[in-house]
Length: 79
Length: 463
Image (cartoon, rainbow over all chains, first blue to last red; front, side):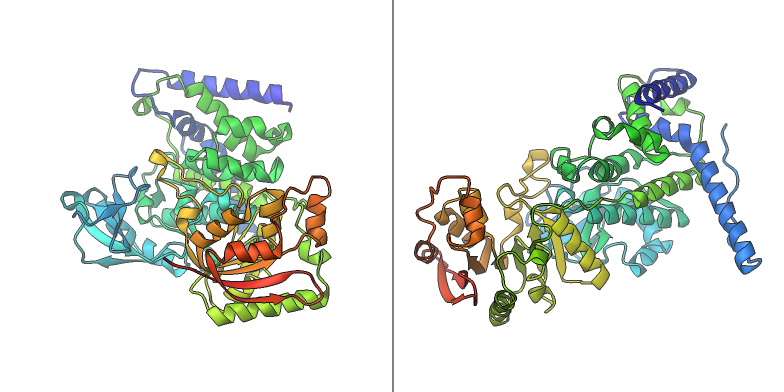
């Protein structure tokens, strides 16, 4: 992926998210970009985290045998 | 209370503020922060953080508040030896500060709390380790809400670390210009293009910067945002940042003085041992309360003090020397030595609002004893500082001075003079003694064996 493609992708994603959220005018928050980016990447990061955690559990299961570990959350809701 | 002096950097957060009274530092917790403070202490989070030495300990005290109408409690934080700033830290220190912050955030989530800010200035190095100092940075975690401190974490930690590791180690000095962390669009511009192929850097720096730019001139009402951020996503975000920071490493490029002691420039084994013996003797003789080693390299001589439980700061201009020194501090579990980056020809200035938020290097002194070994020729010849100005500088900075004089005949000075005219007729041992005698009593001078250099022990003249 070159820099031009990445920048275009970033603009497309940001634009899409903005369109999704464009409803009414209110207070301008300088942290809006950071706030909304988190929401955009939340599902992916949550999914990756859950998979890694599950994979760790599977590896532990085969290494040490079944073990009652703390329950890991598995859902990542997007409404 | 008129005898309370509010700390100049403690004004942003309405939860409380720091103030000083009769030389003791207190923190006022305001009534508005009561629910969060009680949650911190009663949930077990405070104890958990203290058990792992992640948070600075405090004591609730019964003293009059500085602003009575707002006050809920007054606490007295454990005293820190020295306040250092992120632009004075080496790569490893900033990285450990970032990982400590993320560890605290993860721990907080276990107790249904979260960090509401992520300033690198909330970390200090205490007893050899990074510790979080702002007791009022914790708030109740609200499931569904994104992390309010995300932007600040990226600006204060991730951007400088990525720039230091992947572009140039000296870019941490941008933190001196940007007090609220490096702007992400600047970091994005400065980072190599290949970093856009790294998912973490693409998301947290490049897309983050693009998103900030896109929304900079747009109005977004967060109440209309229906999308939520689950706890798993929140943990995923912290995990992603943590893994990214952990993977960032500095390639340890050799710098000018990085292998100083290895190559043993200008010292025979006998001379080095004799210098060590003299310095040790001077330190034992004065047994200072604290010591600043200016030009400490990797801390060989600093440890003559810190190994004897004398709180010691080891300053050096070379990022590699400070990095190596810090790594030794970590691996040896040293509690009394703090390596820091310092360009003595341009030390940290007063910064921030009203030039009062971050103190200049000089304001954080004086110290009891100064160690200035193999330093004076760099100041006097490489940087053209006249000897009287050097004497005055040392005079204001310490009660005791352990100074090494390096004469012109020394090959290190010859090297400095090789490509320039010698405009330093005053740079002689006789002049030095005469000039410094105006500011100090020369208690002892000893010539280093197998060397042309002389060690001085001087005591500041008062009055």
